[in-house]
Image 1 (spheres, rainbow over the protein chains, first blue to last red):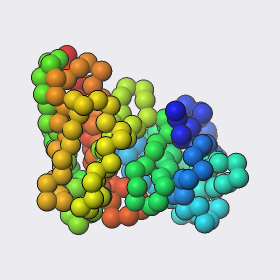
Image 2: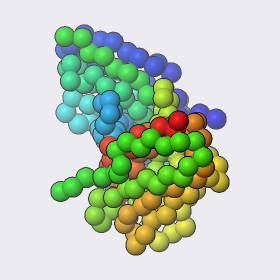
Image 3: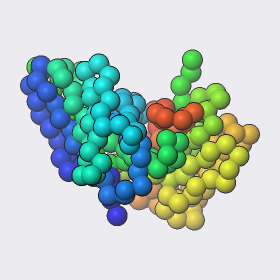
Length: 112
Length: 111
């Protein structure tokens, strides 16, 4: 039972354009959502989070949008840079400190 | 300051042997998590420690897996009688609330 789903295993965008990574969840109790970036042979790195009381959170080039009615969140990266190429995982939890449930990841490739 | 560290970075073992994986969380972090990532898969939750509360073991795949956290700091994940399907990268994370800080992982290969 996959509670957090990333239906696109990969995404390719041109440098300077917008990257949009999508994530869907099924558990309506989730109230805290995070995005992580992972390079090969390294642990995931925290990028940005959002709680269910908000619908948008922005940090530099990264913006996370949350649509609670659709149980959908997305990560926008603009402008995309080649160094953004990595696997992106979305994750969700019930409460900010409880266990995170991760999606299967989306491999982003930013072409120079 | 130091991040989350894990040891060993790589472990090759024979089927049927026991292994211990170690995690040193960030000092002062009350929450500690173990995850694993099998080849081509996402991150699978294993176990979660929060302060002095009883751990959430709901993600452990079998009774061959166990973990402990001594003194609210270092944690050890033990896998008994390893099987080939246990081969994965085992990741530890710690937090004080909010974003979790992950270690680099231990790559376990069971031959």
